[in-house]
Length: 95
Image (cartoon, rainbow, N blue to C red):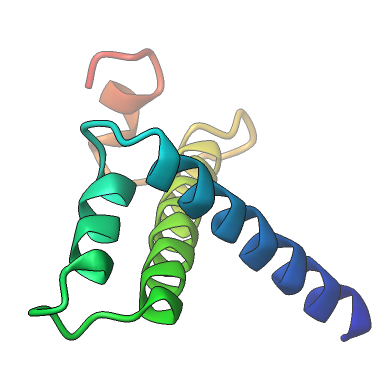
């Protein structure tokens, strides 16, 4: 549990650094767009919410990638003897 907390705190620190960097070096990206909402007094969006949104976005992308990779590995396992018809199209890269 201590390692998980340390990893979370490190990730939050990295995202805060990214926000600081993008604030000084804006670009055409999601982080810069979100910063503009934090800096706009008419918007009700805090810096903490910005960092939380970035954290959720990174984790959502990670989970999707892991799930996709796991599904493909399972589908294309050489020891698999049966499966859905689409597995033959996915394994040789036809899909």
